[in-house]
Image 1 (cartoon, rainbow, N blue to C red):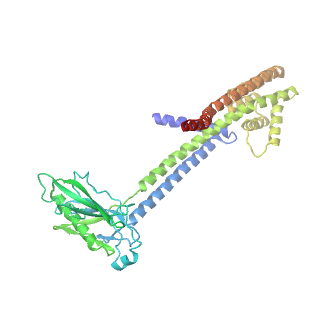
Image 2 (cartoon, rainbow, N blue to C red):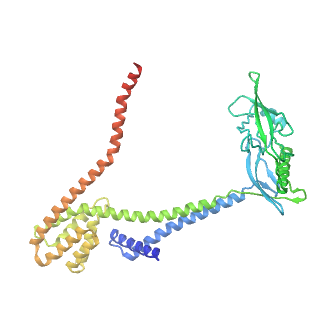
Image 3 (tube, one colour):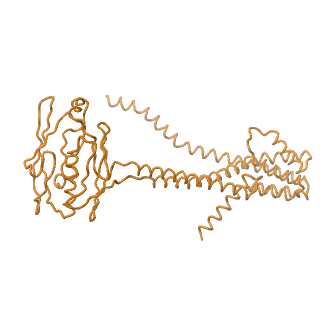
Length: 441
């Protein structure tokens, strides 16, 4: 209920604002056109978001690396490796695999041709996926080169049954407690023909496997063996049966279409809010322009009345001057309202009602006060009106001065911080040479 009341108030405010900005237009039609433009912009953004999200979704589904259900397509050499997310499914179990499909390895002949160009730099961490070297449960990552260093690395251990030279860790048979293993890294400098051995102590935790872990451990080993076996081929055959259990594969695809849709939905809402903000800002500009032109308008009106014209004729003369001197299509809201009043007078509307409507359309308190003065002159004559207009013009000029003084004070306050920064900068450049000279004494 509260939201409905708030929406009604917002619609009412929008109607009033549009009517003030475009007084010549029909109010209800003006509001409907505004709402059509607003809703059209929002719907347009939503449609663009839907199309973009759908296109992104279709692209993500069409791009696949898993061929014929159980084959991975390797990139040709030089095209780079790629990471693929796979899901292995059986009737009983399911597990996700993040598998790196390396680019097709070069044949012996290709290696001979490219051996001077081939430089594989793999900055890796020794512990691999383990927590640290004292909680080893996964294979270690024994790299042969480190990026940025002209060394070759060779690995060995004092217990090759547990840790092989390629970093493979065998936890089989460790049940009740862990086991310490010493590994050695030989750092070779081929240019200087020197080497240095670094020793690390690692602690391998005991193996605790259930039936599911054993199954997927075998599947992982089979996958790695197949990868090594088909290193020079374009396809990798994924295991389809392990211990009598059928394994099916599907690719886990990255789909960001929902995020694109959400972005455009948010953009649609912000666009609608932006239109409402522009409407309020234009109303503020109108109010400021009316305030600036009020004193000049009152003085013009006072001048024409002093020359013997009636208020009606003064309105007509000021409007004609505005039409004659208008340049570059610049809109003056005060004189546009005055044109409407002149049209009402020409159509036979009562002067008192015309002046009242003029004040109501302008909306500012001083214009309403002026419209009351103009209505009173119809019964009391111009003499009292001229005195009141003179007083009103003086008050308007004084208000303008106060407003200008206020704006100047605000501008001075805004400039205070940059001036302080400039002062500090000048002091720094003055004191810096003295400080440097003092340090050299």
